[in-house]
Length: 173
Image (tube, rainbow, N blue to C red; front, side, top):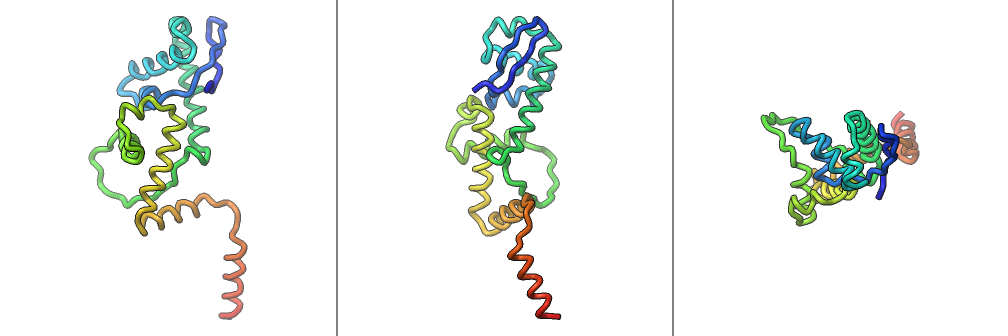
């Protein structure tokens, strides 16, 4: 699946495919700048071939990072890829696991990290969303959190509930 076009400084246009989970983590959660550049250039090589990778200039890489970031932010807001916004109890966390999403999806799909890293990022986000919903639906507290998350994104008024409240208020004076 081709997701965006990149106009390179050399004048060539190339189509960039959806990044894999591994490429996404390299680009958007890199250990250092070198890992991010590697992720971006590997994505170009996989999408458009090694000659396109070789022709990349620094401005092309910066431009690709910006375009890909905008694409990812837009896609992550779509209902199929956006996990429910579950509010968690505040706890002191001294460390944060960078691979937490991978672990949740690995448990849900019974897959290894290596298998998940080769997936396209959109499929991975879909699995992550489903895993969060599945994990929460297993307990009463989790179902309540899912209900709260669902209510927090509703934009249309619940007219039946409003009419019920009005009736109740009128009856109780």
